[in-house]
Each structure stands twice: as structure tokens, then as C-alpha cells.
Figure 1: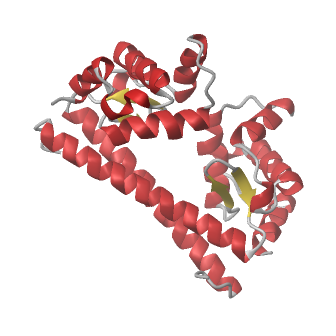
Figure 2: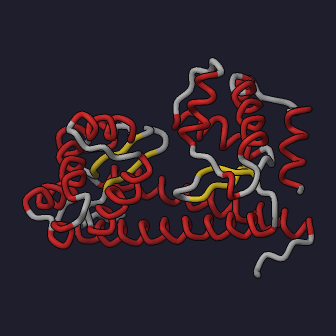
Length: 132
Length: 131
């Protein structure tokens, strides 16, 4: 099934997430993305999504949205992609979008791995034990 | 406290900047100063929002994503290691315990991103994308 079709299905049936505390925020987020952010060209910033949720009466912080809404949606299979270059979130509409999403995640892993290596080296330089 | 010392040294001497980096020198200095004054050690971690608010209060026209890329990322590249813990915020490492927490935090993120990559691969196969 396509990424967009999965998102549309989620609006009809939230499955295991139907009793989730943030179900309303999840549905509104997916609806908003379907309406405005299909394809990487239409990527929208997290700030705009949060502003929209606030305008709909959902008092959710950015951090809570990232963990409790975005994270859960992704685990469930509604894959909200992100692209740093475009600074925003989007639903994948074709293979090219999927490639952007893939590269974005891959780059984030590389950055984190590089950061980890630096930190571990700094610890070694100081003679600090890495593992307790 | 090598991490605190590196941050203090940065305030005294930022080294050379490219033309693009130069635009963010002020924000970098103010960010490091604010963290040294308020966020040394994981127990004093402060949210990104508070840092952004402080910068705006100081007259910098900045936004979260721009700050993360042009200020936080650039500082980390320069060896000013600003650690972060999900749900707590940003801090400068003070102790070995802080450092271990920072390492765990990064390892957790890598794990999450790897899981996300695997999910994307599976969904791409299901959508008959070659990717």
C-alpha cells in the first residue's frame, strides 16, 4: 500500500492507537499533512504543524508532539518523512520522495555516529571510563 | 572539566570563521555564554526553547531549525560539545556521569533512526519502490 493510502486509512481507523491519549492530535496531524504536505516539495515545518494543532485547540508542546504523536505514528506505520534541507515534514508520494527520506535518516545516523566517536575520544583523552 | 574549559576558551577565542559562519558568531558566543551560566551538568539542562527565547531577548533574529543547524551544529563541529537529553534539554558536560548519559542519549538516537530506516525499507518494499 502507498504511504498516502496508509495515511488516509489511518483517518478512518486508528487501530491500536484508537485509545491513545493523543489520538486527536494524531488524526489532526495526519489530516493536516494529507491536506498540505504530500511530497517533499510541499514539506512543512514542525512549527507550522504545532501552530495548526494549537489553532485546533490541542495544547501540545513540540517535544510531546515529536515523541507522543510523530514517534507513535511512525511506529504504527504512518510514515511521516522529514528533510533537513527542506526543513519540514511530508508524506512520501513517490520513489524520489522515499529516497530523500532515506538519505535524510541515513545522514542523521552518520552525524550521530560521528558525534559519538568524538565524545568517546574526548573521554579517552581525559582518561575517563566510558562504561561504568 | 575539559568540556567546560573548551566552552570558556571559545568565549575568549573563537578562531577563524568562514563568511557564512561569521553571520552566526554572535549567536554562537551568546549560546555558549548562556549555557555556561545556566546549564553546566545534566541536572541543569535547559530546553532549546529557552535558549532560543534568550537569544531573541538578546536581539538575535533566530528560529529553532536555523539555530540547530547554524549554531548548535557549528559549535559541535568546533569541539564545543553541547550534550542533549530528550525531555530535559541541552547542557555542557561536567562529570563522567554526564558524559555517559550523553553517550547513552546518542546511542538511543542511533537506535531509533536505525529502526526508522528499517521501517522505511519495509514500507518501500510494500509500495513496490525499488529504493
